[in-house]
Structure formats: C-alpha cells, structure tokens
Length: 237
Image 1 (cartoon, rainbow, N blue to C red):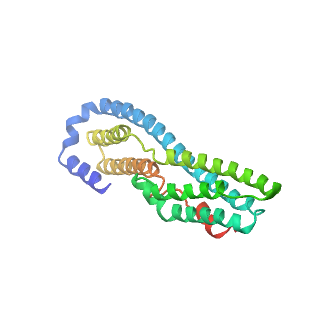
Image 2 (cartoon, rainbow, N blue to C red):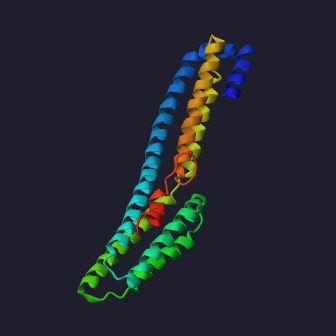
Image 3 (spheres, rainbow, N blue to C red):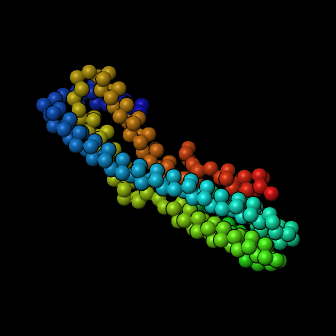
C-alpha cells in the first residue's frame, strides 16, 4: 500500500497525470471493464475454492465420526477382540494429527497414515467373534470400516486439489492491471489519488490473500482443524 501510494504521489507531483487529462473517460471505462471481468473470475474462483475447503472439513467430520462409531459399536465384543481395534483407531488418529496435515499441505505422499489405516481394516477383518451377538456386532463393524475407508478416500482426493496455476495467474495479472491503470487516471486532487490507490491496493492484496490462503486447507490463517481426530485419542474408550 505504501509503495503504491508513494509511486502515485511521485508521478502526480512530476505532472504525469496531466498527460492523460483528456483520456480520463476512456481510462475510467477500461477500469470498469477490467474490474467487472476481475470480479466475475474472482467470485468463481473463490466459490470453487471455498467449496473444496468446506468439503475437506465435512470429510474430516465424516471420517472421524465413522471411526468414533467403530470404537463405540465395538463395546459389546470381549476385551481381547476389541482392544486391537481401539488401539488401531487411536494410533491412526494420532498419526493423522501428528503428520498428515503437514504432509498434505506439502502435497507429499501419506504413506504413514495409509499404513495405519490399513491396520484398522486388518484389526476389524481379523477379529474372531464368538456367538451370534458378537457376529452381528462384527458385521456392523465391517460396514462402518467400509464407510470410513470411503470417507477417507474422498477426503484425501479433495485435499490434494489446488487452484490451477493458470487461473491464479489470470486473477493476479487482472488485479495488477487494475492497479496499473489507476496510476494513469488523472485525479485532480493529489490526496484523493493517493488514498484511492492505497485502498485499491489493500483490497486487491487481501482478495489475493484470501484466495491463496483458502487454496491450501492445511496451512495459513484459515485451515481445517484436526480436533475431531484428537478427540478419538482422548475422549472415547
């Protein structure tokens, strides 16, 4: 903001704006056209990115909810059968909290948590229920495990999506074009020109900040919370 305002002030004091006094209407029309284009593209990009961000949050709640059900519905099983399942769920949840957020934010492979989730599946499929009641519970646990696996696959698939670089470049270049044209607009009042340039710079900067920050749901100012997985470690027995 300070650099843009200072640049405009120097240009204005040098008499640069006088060269474009007769073109004020044309520059204003061009600013309006490009501004409209920017607003449409930015709104579309924000809508898509926010939708993905919300979908990741929803996927976290679905997956952690299914794993919570796995712990709760396994209670009728005898302790020796149930313990490996509960232990596998907690180990997986701890692995997600400790490493998966950072790994996904970098776009790296999540081999560790993939392996830990496979251990949950193995603990359920390898359980040996005794009696009709335990077999009924075990069937339910197999169903819940399938749901959790589907939720996890969906969450990971959405988590690795990022805004296309070409779209981000287009939005950024359009914003810079608006700011560039503003330097040519012949404000008669220096103070009004400086304030206008500073405000537009601030708005364009924060618009770009919101877009890029939401694009990665695992880091930045706004990010998804791993608390649902932390709760699996501490709250449910």
